[in-house]
Image (cartoon, rainbow, N blue to C red; front, side, top):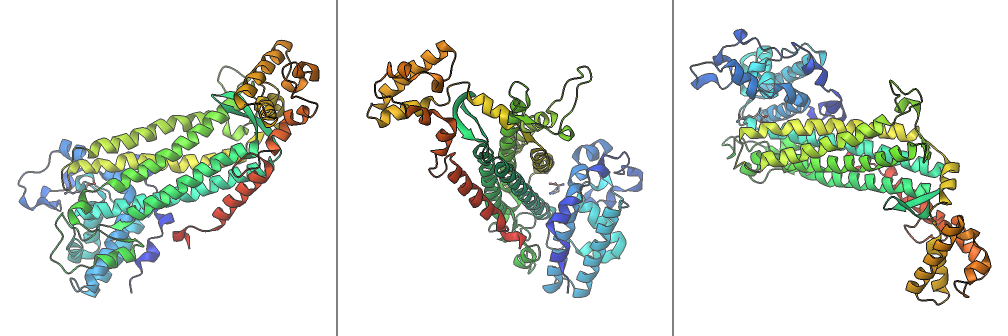
Length: 501
Ligand code: ARG
């Protein structure tokens, strides 16, 4: 029988980007002369043809052509279901499925005759199908409306996008872990307020990002469960009188379930919003790391050297090596925020059910999809190719009294109330600052002049490596804790995602 699931491999769908095609001049034909208004699938009740300006203003083919693979898979599942249910004959269903295969082949070969006057991807494909298979093509839309069709296509597209993001975010987590493993003994100043605070291990710092992207993957996975629900069968808004089998369609397309309310099914765009939010959070995480890379690449920090492949030069200053990739990624994050607000705003005034405003939903999502996808992939590359300068990080530890907390804790452990210990340590810092030295370089006499509780063993406590090594509580920066984190993250990465298997 008809094996649609085979044809609907998510990774393939997303790979067949049509951006290049639609941006080619002449990629979309606009020759209205070739078409009569009666050629429009909805042209029956119209006497005058649509004005060219209106066609150009209302079309969506220039962006929803991106959803062609989902549209075809959805239509094939629908046709197969119509055949099984006896709404059309099984011979007719086979013809429709085969014709749609040919349409897909034409699109992927770049020979498909896209027509702006046919408005959107759905009518372009259906019209071409009818040219290929003849009148039986006109049966495809039985029991279906573009209102439920477009939701199905978009839900599949969003869910495929989420899956792609999840794979890429997991790959990036893997690179953070690799870099953490390679720099297990490297220390650097951990900051709060962008001021030196306490020494931490570089591995711990990098793993903080691995945990963020792991949460992102989990968030996307939760979201995907709500996205991959089939609305097909809701028809225009009220359901239909045909004996359809929505569950069969959902099963064929690898979806988790079907709609519960036909009006909600065609009006709901929460799924796209939620996915946009997931993508936006990921961009925000990437942007925070970009910000760190940009600081760290500055020679005054000198903590990292970005690879030449991920840097650019200046047209006037010959010495420059700029972190442009990180800057552009930080910049694109703003655009992703805009896309989320864009759709939220589009949705806020829309009464039940489908309103044409909803056609605007794809533009922000397509843009965020590309941004998230490309940014995750590029960051994995860039991070893998970044070298970390352990000596510069080590040198930076000596500025900023990163061991002050150690001294305060030392005094508190000897019975001094912590507030007082904090105060005495502050005086030690002032003293060291005056002498232009670190706390560990103050003489024992000087330290004892502040408190008789201090003895020779204080110097071991003031040691930076010791300060890190002692923080082995779960989630701390100590080496045992960091190793446990890496193991936990690696265990998570070794278990494939539910839909991968
Ligand atoms: N191009 C439309 C969209 O993307 C398809 C749905 C049109 N439905 C309608 N009732 N006009 O939303």
